Amino acid sequence: MTHDIIIIGAGPAGLSFARLLAGAGLDILLIEKQSEKILANPAYDGREIALTHLSHKLMTESGMWSRISSKDISLIKDAKVLNGDLENPLYFDHRKSGKENLGFMISNHHIRRAAYEVCKPFKNIKLMTGEEVAHVSTGLNSGEVTLKNGKKLTAKLIVAADSRFSATRRMMGISTDMRDFGRTCIVCKMKLDRDHDDTAYECFFYDRTLAVLPLNGRYCSVVITIATDDAHLVLDQGKAEFGREITERMEGRFGKMTLDTELFPYPLVGTYADKFYANRYALMGDAAVGMHPVTAHGFNFGLRGAATLANEIKTAHDLGLDFGSEDVLCRYHSAHRHATLPLYLGTNALVGLYTKTTPLAKLARKALLSLGQHIPPAKKMIMNQLTEAS
Ligand SMILES: Cc1cc2nc3c(=O)[nH]c(=O)nc-3n(C[C@H](O)[C@H](O)[C@H](O)COP(=O)(O)OP(=O)(O)OC[C@H]3O[C@@H](n4cnc5c(N)ncnc54)[C@H](O)[C@@H]3O)c2cc1C
Image 1 (tube, rainbow, N blue to C red):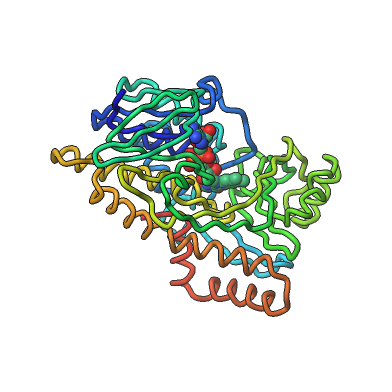
Image 2 (image 1 turned 135 degrees about the vertical axis):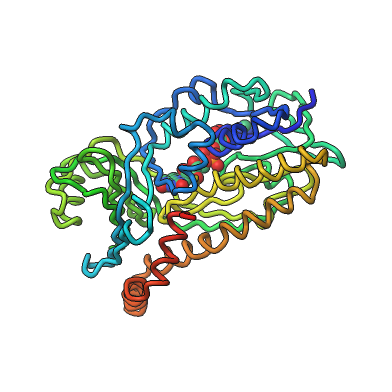
């Protein structure tokens, strides 16, 4: 059967892309290996996603935002970045950003559920779940997807949103920068004894990084990044011991901190595709840009890319042009690369610097924070990059 567009992967990026394109009247097929039951009701996975103002706008336009209860949307008003000994933080004050807050926090499972729900009412978006794509190939005018069960499907354009380890990206011959950081990110939710004042803390200790991100009420999301060899030191801690250590590391500023969920480990690998397209094939979400979570941009970039590609396709289609042509895909590639590459490279450099413990690296870390603190244009530039404020 032939479709206009086949999207491989109904993760948050694939679903958001389908929804942003729904109004164009194209016949869209989403193929996802997970069951529809999981998409409709995803389990909590420990990820609390920091969202930018651009993501807020795109999620509002797509109807996702209003599907998430306001009690599940937290604000990040201010942010403090601390180096090693918690002294002299680099302080990002929302009042200097011209916005009421720097960003928002929403659990990944709420985002995924909302993305699924906004696609469901559209008759031109078909969802094929419990099916895995085994092979992709493309020709002059169309692409062909072969499912694991041998069934073949064709479309004028194939969009792969099949994760940072995208198997179809390799099949299409797109080389990718892959960086295994040798580190693991451990996330959980904690209860606090004192208010967090809607302030996010990113603490670069010498043995690990610790982010404490504000959630509604006296709760926070805790993100620990640690060498994979040492991850067991955290994962094997009992609830009380874990709570005591985080409380001490934060010098008691939130009073006693108590673990409220299990600990969720994620091995850290950054990926950046050399090209976001091939013949009749485009990459989307983490399959295009898989960020280290320290700058909290993976899904934000996924949404941005989804909007960019959807707009390019709509424009071409409205003009009666071929929406799967190289011109269209190349414009998406250029715009998305321009928007994402500086932060991808900057994030990796930051991660490199803040995980080294040599005396020179410690000096450079202090110098960098001081530069950010005392040079207002540098601080403003970092703030604009991180919040995607227009
Ligand atoms: C600890 C942590 C914290 C994070 N914090 C933030 C944050 O604060 N802000 C932010 O913006 N981002 C953050 N991110 C990143 C964000 O979670 C990801 O960018 C986002 O989930 C990626 O969505 P995706 O749809 O591109 O990919 P995925 O969520 O990986 O979805 C891919 C989908 O494709 C399906 N699939 C794969 N292969 C096939 C196949 N062959 N056939 C059929 N289906 C297939 C999979 O089943 C899956 O459903 C964080 C990530 C982590 C790990």
